[in-house]
Image 1 (cartoon, rainbow, N blue to C red):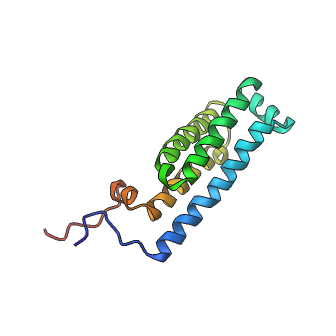
Image 2: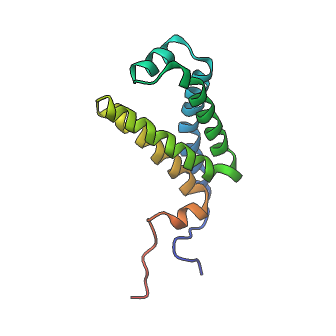
Length: 138
């Protein structure tokens, strides 16, 4: 008998998890690499958000490294935790500058996609998230 919160791993769950993992990870890798390359548009946008230009490279290193950790199955939970913090900083930044709804919600959706991917691929993650099977012993 399966423990509460444990789900059989099906092919559909695995593929849903892979899709939910790869889509945001590709975007985050691109964003991280752009911060490493530092084209004018990235520098200007970062400065407009109130950050000095000299933090772009460290942000790129953190973002790229965290995303790589997320893509490695053995370190995916650590990567997701680090990316959640990074995305939380993005939300806080956009709230602070009075950005519209989309720039605030966008990183939240990415966090949901990242954890959703893990939820479908990793039984340990699906067992600790709040969506559990009902206890039928009542």
